[in-house]
Length: 225
Image (cartoon, rainbow, N blue to C red):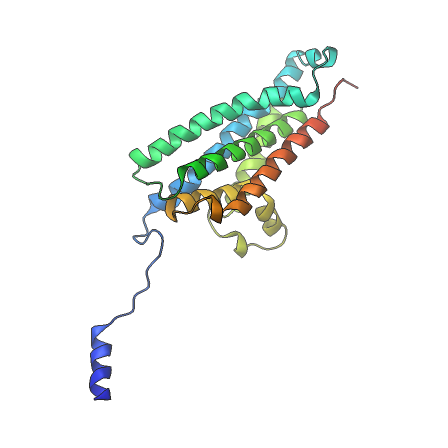
């Protein structure tokens, strides 16, 4: 009897390994959720990197020196319009992801929208920081490219997991905002998760956004030395 049952089980069942998310192993559902944050990081940072340094080159930065406007107000005035542009780009890219590429948003879109807003403040903050510490537009663009594209692609889990990195690369991956935005985007697009499961990522994005803005404000001189 046992031999008969063993033969039935051995012939009636077969164990297969399947992927829980993206079971067909298609490239678009894997790449679209990380391509959107990558563009949301790169483009706003490069555009914002020109915001302050352009005024340095033109000499119009003198308006900051002779008016009672604080450095924080000046920086926010430069940052917020680019955040608005970034959110417009995010909406367009999300629409294209769903309609043109056929990658549905399985989770909470408001969660993804909030993460994109915080991430837009992070990316524009990086751009402001690059603009503050440079004196030419070429240098600002180059610095913005280096500090956004390289960490995002090499250390933030876009190609391989952050857990597989070691040393300085692992540390950069843990603190870089793209790591957390990639996690949120993948979780919402592919895993149908919501804010309750991703609150730690939102906290990291909020802290990074405030830190980059504070650093840019601190490094901006209120008058030429």
